[in-house]
Amino acid sequence: MRFYIETLGCPKNTVDTEMMSVLLAQAGHKLVTRPKRADVIIVNTCGFIEPARQESVSALQELASHKRRHQLLVAAGCMAQRFGDDIRRLVPQVDALLGTRSWAEIAALFARLDREGKRTLSLDWIADEGNIIYSARRRPSMGATAYLKIADGCDAACAFCAIPLIKGPQRSKPVDEVLREARELVDAGVREIVLIAQDTTAYGRDLGEHDALPGLLCALADISPSPDWLRLMYTYPQHISPQLVETMAALPAVCHYVDMPLQHGHPDVLQRMRRPHDADSVLVLVDRLRDAMPDIALRSSFIVGYPGETEAEFEGLLEFMNEIAFDKVGVFGYSVEEGTPAADLSGRIPLDVIEARREHAMWVQQEISLARNQEQLGRELPILLEGTSDGLSVGRSYREAPEVDGMVLMPGELPVGEFIKTRIVAAQEYDLVAEAIL
Image (cartoon, rainbow, N blue to C red):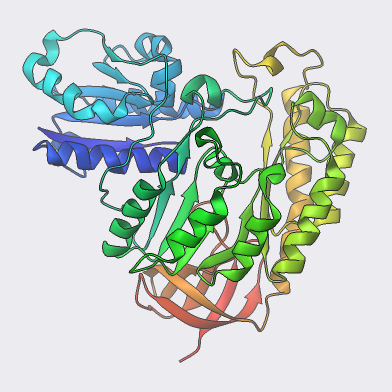
């Protein structure tokens, strides 16, 4: 059968989609690039927060409205896992659900659909227990960059987060599987590997290893052929060990870039979030990172409007942002998630106040980001080229992660997928402008 996949949500969904595509291709099915050419349409949904669920439902409804008589529509991923009944109610044209703990069975699902087609009603492949950490040969979909999921699920107990309800407990991918996958990606032309998990710094803890990430980085840097860049996303500040900092500083392939979502900067809000609330320890960690890697780029994300957040607590967050001066920041309004402890908290913040705080925090960060970018003026940086258009090339330095950070813009149409030596000549709030050094 011919299949089409649309991916929503985070990079972890991107990895699952790439692997599902390969599993289906190995079973004799053919990937097509337009839904109207497909026998089966798959939407890999996101169910993390309400806006993401709305986007998933809209995508399913749009595709359902154009379904041909014999086409089949599958809702996969996080929303299918936790809110399958809502999908059935809002998009009755969906023919099957495939959860996050069952997606590796996609070929078996297709075999069932092929046999029974429209005669199969309410076909749900949703596992309620356990977790899945699967590794299959992949066809990278992002050119010279690829995500590598080293673990899935989460053992943290953050009060606002539904991920443990969707994904289950953490399971780490065995080292040999991570290395095999990395070799295959590099062999396929990938130059940058971005390591992802719900918490990459918790890698190996479910296997009895307290601080396994430094060793994994060393092993990845030592494979042949090796990636040019290794980038860490989704790190947990209390799990960033001195050994990890030393390893990052010592390995040339590891980008001097750390993404650590802190969620807030005021200890009282963090305590209500059931997050580590010792702000001083974060300041010490940031100093340690910057001492070891003076050119490091730091990214974080914050939630505003959490239940009970006072004006003083919000101002405390802004002071925290100014004190650390993160290079990159994302700010999100709190979203009530059914089944989480935070959903039962009193002191809900009105939506207009949440949005005003989000805009204010982003305005504060714009000033910080501009200043941090201006510090790059005159630096010579290698840029990984990602695309060209109308005489302009677009890429990223080690300071920018794919899809979430700004870009580096350069005049001329330069070779995509290659590293170009450049000099930074202008800075904007989010993007940099560079000239190629020939």
